[in-house]
Image 1 (cartoon, rainbow, N blue to C red):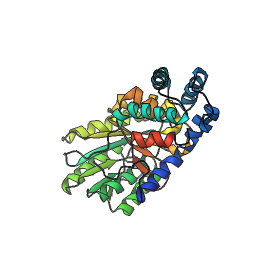
Image 2 (cartoon, rainbow, N blue to C red; image 1 turned 135 degrees about the vertical axis):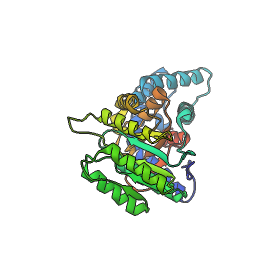
Image 3 (cartoon, rainbow, N blue to C red; image 1 turned 90 degrees about the horizontal axis):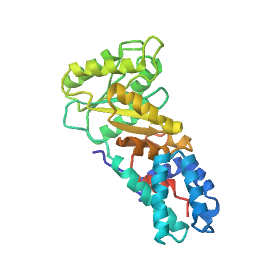
Length: 320
């Protein structure tokens, strides 16, 4: 398991991680706060009208119907038991419900026993796959793993160059064949090279959008078939990267990629640029897939392991 999980309001270096997460969720937090009016000033009575407003605010933040219904029903039960008397207690109850809902998907990334342990990183164009690979490689190297990168996004010359830059920064080898090469062949060569060099982890990049004559899902299915010929059970993890800005539309991407390559875990990026960060809750409720990482900014250290308590407190930091 990777170390360095963010904690709520810690000291020193970790405090900056908390601050970055809190800042990245500002747009979503403001949207929720605006939806419940002056509750944040402690002036509202917790009644049916307020709960209706809270329900709308959660839906607008893309928490989703299923998850919102569960949260509101749980809050109503607490109100009926007279457990919530003010804004602070309501906020604490919301945090508690969110944490309970998100806890099942909070499973940190772990390097399994297989060598090399192969992670196939997939997602549509522009979600930040290549950047995530670079940041994850840095974390793995820092934790003592030997890492090799496979430049499987051969349809964008910039992707190969970007991954090569990450390799130089992290001191990790990069296997590439240039723009237009066969992606499956690149990744095949990378795994063979990793075996020969006793590398611990292979992080394989993939295209997010292909030319009209080649279907993206067909290409990914081919990559997975080629990996299978090598034996050893690769890929050992298929990590789907989602852009938080698309909100619940991400569920369509989860279904499509899962059908093609069998998604095993998620990373949700670009939380700092959206007011739809509540979609994490909707995705968790709908899929149950582990959320390994969240991206809270462009900085090299802005890839964080997903922690429900920290996330929920950061999301509702100014409420109550």
